[in-house]
Length: 81
Image (cartoon, rainbow, N blue to C red):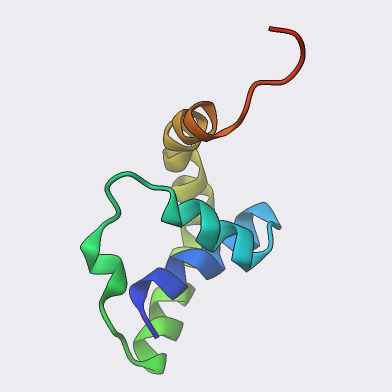
């Protein structure tokens, strides 16, 4: 397991998006955090997930500006604009 798996699981729970879609979007990040690829034990994974689940609302509110920038950068325009 990697720290990235904790983030993917949490984002999946918060957004309802499939994990594969979240992984794909994470791959589009310009400067991914190298710490996300750090190997962790199952116990550490479960503990981190438990801790972050308690802070889901705060994490969600903190991530909104970055999510908006991501979508503006990676979502094709719609309509006749």
